[in-house]
Length: 399
Length: 85
Image (tube, rainbow over all chains, first blue to last red; front, side, top):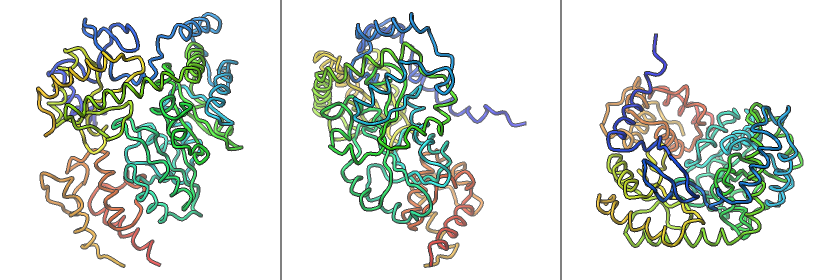
C-alpha cells in the first residue's frame, strides 16, 4: 500500500533545511501583538512589516469596543450557515454598509477572503463556461476556478494582448466568459493595467471580476480599490475583497449590480456550507468600514509611507518586484539559502517581513516581501530601510 | 496546417528546454512533470508556451490526464485538427 503522506517528504526536508538556518519562516509564532506595527517574537520586540495591515486598524478603540459588545450581546459564534440559523441583523447590516461604500447594489459577505473567491467564482461560472485567469492569480482564484468546473484558460500576467488572443480563439457560443484580475498582485505589488483590459472587454465581450483584496481601502479617491483609482468602476461587473487586510478582521465579500446577483447565495457552496462569520468579527468590520470612509488620512499616510520605503529601497540599489509605488514592496533575492539567511538576519535585527519562495512566487523568484501600514511612523520606515541596508547588502543581493 | 507527430514532438522538446536544465533525454513515455521535476506552476507556464506557439487552447483541466510527452503530442495534434476548417 502506498503511504499517503510519503509524497510530502521533500517538502518536509525543505522545511528542515530552512529550520536549520534559524527561525521557522513559515510557522513563526507571534508571542504577543503590541500594536498594528509591533510584536514580541522570540522574546524580542520587532517592527511588523509583513502583515497586510494596510490601514493599521487592528487596535482601534471603537472597533475593539464594538467587537466586545457583539461578543456579549450575540455570543462567541453563530454556530450555523447563512442559509440556516447563521444570519444575524449585523450580517445584513455589514452587507448594506459595504454595498453603500462600494457604490454597488448588492453585496454578499463570506467567512474568509479565500472563500469569497471560491464562492464568487464558483457562483458565477459553471462547467459550460470558461474562466480566463491571469497567470499570477492568487491560489484562491485558481481553487475557485477548479471548484466551478469551468474550462480554465491562463493568460500571461498583466498582458491584455495575451488575453485577447485567447478570447479570439474561444467560441462565444460555447458558454459564458469570466475574466478574473487583481487590483494589486500580492507578491510583486503591481496593479492590473485595467484600462487596457477594459479595451479588450469592449472588443471581445466578457464579464469581469476584479479581486481588490490588496487594493480595497488602499487605492482610489474613495478607497474602493483599483477600479475607483482608474475611474472604471462601471466596467467592472463584480468586485471581490477581504476583511483580513484593510478592515483588520477576517471575512470577505463579493459585490455587483447584476439583477440576479443575490442568486449567488444559493449557487455557492463556500457560502452555504460553512458557518457565518462570528459576531465579533462582523461588528469590528462594520466599524472599520465606517472608518475607511471617515478617515481618508489613512490612505494618504499609507501611500506616503509606501513611497518612503520604495524610494529608500531604490536608493539602496535593491531589485524590487515592480516599478510603481504600492503598499506591497518585494525585494528580489538570489536563491533560497540566501533569502532564508537574510530573512533570519532581519528578524534578529528587529524587523519581520514575509519570505516568499517558488512555486508561490511569480517567475520563480525568491522574495523578501514587505507590506506597509498607515500606522508605521516615519522612523519605522527609516529603520526598515536601514536594516535592509545592513542585512541585505551585507549578504549580497541578486547581482 | 497539419504538423506531423514528429514535428510536434520536436517543437515540444524545444519548448521544454528552459524547464529542463539537467537535459533529461525526452522520449514518448517521458513523464514531463515527474521526470523533469517541474513544479505545478512550471507545468502551467510550459503549457502557456505550447498554446502560444501552436495558437491552440489547452485548458488547464486537461492537464490532470496529460502526463507523458506522447499524451501531450496527442492533445496538440487533436487541437490542431479541431482548428483546421
